[in-house]
Length: 270
Length: 241
Image 1 (cartoon, rainbow over the protein chains, first blue to last red):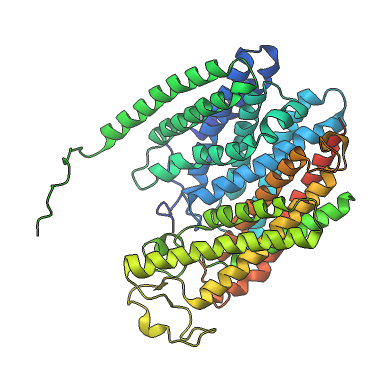
Image 2 (cartoon, chains in turn purple, red):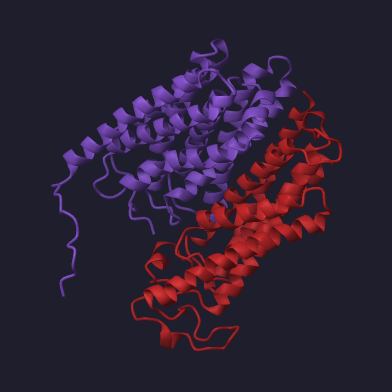
């Protein structure tokens, strides 16, 4: 079903660099949340955008083999895994003791990665899928998705503690919005750019723009919960404008030609 | 509630959801251009539609006996599937102009009507014939029961904890309902996608030869949901802060 079947291929971007950007940028951003009431949530949202870019690269590597179910399905699955992992990690962190606020987010990411690995192993061993990078790819995707969910949740709540996230993200229902929004942000870039002429740099430019527009929306959601909502919204909107312009220019450069066909004629010609 | 019962309920729910997906006529991209039988979209979208509707109807029954929650979830999900297939068929019949026909069987097992005469050469069937429709409704019922069961198990486990206690005694706890809802939704998506990996993208319903793969799909969903249930127990630990 997927047009991109064939897989492998040399990516224009080193996957290790994107992985490092996602893991390091994401975790620094998330852990910076409690330190400053204005900059903290902003850094958390930027961390989530790093996670989305990493996720978009990971999904491109897995789905280029042709899953048979379309690109969005693995995106939805990774976000489902991430949300279960993150909520369980944040809640279960209480067992560690007083230090739980510090360790719980990391526990959430690790739980999501483990669950992702198990689902992929089941897919490979029981269902018999033949994608060589399925296990590592799904683990990366689950990690990226959990960083995106955690970062955006921390940006809305202004805190990493479970009670604050429960109050401002879960009971308001924003968690369901984050679910679908992060899925779209992660799966859309490759779903839109796939094909034989896919250029990973261009795909990642689109990933940056989907990430930043999600960040803008998260800024608006945070309106009632912290004072830095306008910082997140404005910076997200500016960054979205820059990245979508870069993507449109890249598309224009790589297209064979672009012509304006004009509007359709007023009367149908028979 | 005992955490072991919750794990058991989540596992059973996962198998019901994964099994239900095997019944749903998922046509994928070929069906979107009416060259294959089924609804013209992927499993993830059908799961999102019917799963969320089922969860909303199940959650509306929060606090009622278990059978009522399960019935509400089943009816909600099945209704959404039925409406999706019905409107899809209108588009296929009056928009595209094709006769609903299955390419996998010569006669419809339910109505006994001829199928092969009506299949356009070069296609894998088109539209949603009666057998696919009935199969899809069964799939929606199973999936809805699964989603409702997972929601009920997590909600009933959470609501006894101090952090999730309802604001007014005897009423629904919104926090617990949201956590249980999002957990059940996550379980729905994971199992739907694992089951669709097992199907390999497209299936017509219980009369399709691919339906014989259901034991493997149920086993895969069992393992995945068991692990999800084990992780879900951690949610209960957070209720004591």
